[in-house]
Image 1 (cartoon, rainbow, N blue to C red):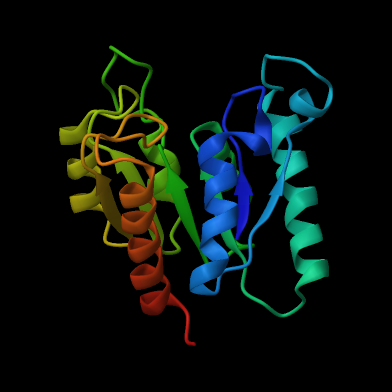
Image 2 (image 1 turned 90 degrees about the vertical axis):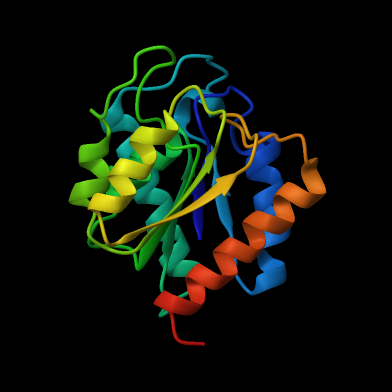
Length: 188
């Protein structure tokens, strides 16, 4: 899996991204993380979409070089999830998206849903039920309308998937969901 971080200046060291990279190999999924240029340059504001897309494409090329012949799963957290969908429709076997931002907090809408609709490979959407960037009724509506999207809710989870269940239980649920989803899209 090629795993892109969100808009945090912590980049690939964001706790969720780091934890996913540490834990997903336990279910047989190799993970390649990278930093978008704004993080490498020490800036706090994300680059423009064309720059982010170029960085994702370069990381995708590196993933294919390191693991030739292995299907690549596009992955991302928040901003990284959106860039993964913009970048890899023909270049990936599917996508795992964490905290996909449908709308700004307090402004429920589905403008970003077009990215989910245009990406026709299988998608696993992992969303916290308290995510201010994704109204849950809108998430369910989008998933119902798009057969290629599967949904895993993190009960009580916020935009970073932190939940009252704690990090161990939350990650266990995410790993189980990813493992089940992978079994439906990739032969093992």
